[in-house]
Length: 394
Ligand SMILES: CC(C)(COP(=O)(O)OP(=O)(O)OC[C@H]1O[C@@H](n2cnc3c(N)ncnc32)[C@H](O)[C@@H]1OP(=O)(O)O)[C@@H](O)C(=O)NCCC(=O)NCCS
Image (cartoon, rainbow, N blue to C red; front, side):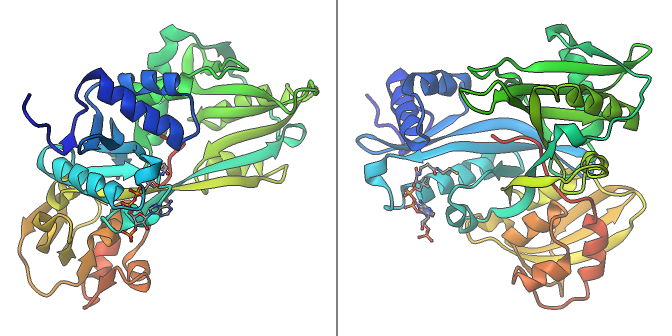
């Protein structure tokens, strides 16, 4: 049998099972459940091996919205190293191999939630947005009259949900252009309680939807909380309809938890009548894998015309390093190698700028942008946008 490469796809079921066992142990899960999870990724699994399986990861092939355009990305998850083999550099080696593969034949960006941020930062990922979970008391929600009808959503309505989701999130930096696997995560039924789903309509025209589950506060109590997975409201009336639906659970339910942008219209409306707690804030990271492709694929304002030069420093992917000239006009970015007199930007800085998470002045404070500040104003204008976030975890 030909010798297998050190990094690559798993070789058959035995290696898939061995990787599933690593993920199960890494994330305190059930090995059988993770075998099914790994199978679901098909060819989106990578492992590192020598005479045994050392580590593995999975790839969500999906998109991420920046500037209104969906940029294909590899969402990296399930990064795990056999516990007895940790702290020997295997995770770093596997992630670097993955980056090189991504540079050669994958999409222009890569996204992940880091449990070990230093591992990814050293390889060029940077914090670029957040997933915020807010909580409010159901009994204090603002309840307003609305002329919208609520109806339960079934499997045949999936295209309506996807259309509403896209209309609401396409112009939010960082939100996922969800793949089927991500939608499956949103719809997955937990053991205790099924997900419920409703669409708010006016004369049959959908304006919003929600998917939520109910969680008992304890085994002894009949009271529960509402855990909202998706709350997509494209009009104030749709939000009023959904808040009314949630509020009408208050005889037996106490709290509402939902995911929203740091300054979301939903959060502002809820905060009108009740204290809103930020329960959880998880930050995701972005890696610009191919500078030119990533910059040219992003969306930009048609009302900004600007030119800038930057000198990119990328030790892991030298193909990105060097001077680049950026010319933005009519909503299209033209990127050409070369140019003179630009500031030096670490590839991590470009991720933060690209996502609209940091402006040039903040990059300077973080040490990710140095040298002349002559190009700061055009760079700020090119990448100005709303705070990046996403409602999903993967
Ligand atoms: C996190 C994990 C993948 C690291 O694997 P590893 O092979 O031990 O990591 P490496 O030896 O390649 O170390 C790479 C870098 O990550 C850092 N790192 C490693 N383990 C870490 C940990 N538990 N917490 C924080 N940082 C860690 C190291 O300091 C090292 O940084 P350096 O290059 O500056 O020295 C491994 O501990 C693991 O499988 N943990 C359980 C699952 C998990 O948390 N996965 C990450 C999901 S995003």
